[in-house]
Length: 173
Image (cartoon, rainbow, N blue to C red):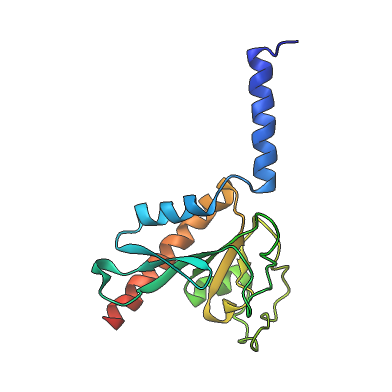
């Protein structure tokens, strides 16, 4: 039979909820677009199999200063998130170390080449804040496949990464 308007709406809401639970709302290009539109002086650079948002107003530096990256596949020295799974990607950003400590406890030691930081996290878990599996020692955090809600919670940290990059840029130019 025909669905009523209420039935169609309820079906749509149910499907939307499933998408949110699965973290299917945000696409990598939407996150990059958000950064380029909201972080003045930011530029997109593609290299090493990832897309990065750098602070580099006027292209003063060769690349700029990292704000955020989106990585969609494992690298030789970065396999902790198991990004080679279909549709899995990771958003990475560098926050101040005091913010990192508030979120995750302590800043870990640098891992050996090809290793993962020694922290008690499942670095392949989706839609939650995690220390970066390799660069946590530098104060980097990440989220795999963020939902819209998790991305909203991540936005203040993106802003912090942006402000932090601006400070680093001012010292380099």
